[in-house]
Length: 138
Image (spheres, helix red, strand yellow):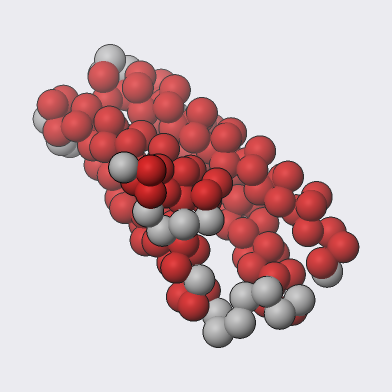
């Protein structure tokens, strides 16, 4: 499976950017502008599909690394990967709160901005393969 690692990683990175862009557009329109079209079922299902493919590609990458012996001891033996997974959970929760119409606008905007910051930090953790991400340089 390791022979397909570069292709799977490329798909994964592109899906990350697509997912982030879709959240940026939908979340900005919904939380900041109060628009209802970002909550449309078609866009929600597109987001679910992208995220499902994203998680599938992540699992494939992890499987390829594990089978090659590069990730001994599982996910949590690798510090940056564990941090990235925890940040992913935080990002998803903040994104849910940012998209919910039942919350006040200021709360939605705060969750939206926080989700974007978590996304950016998660990106730096993944790029640097270090749990501190960009904070490593401070």
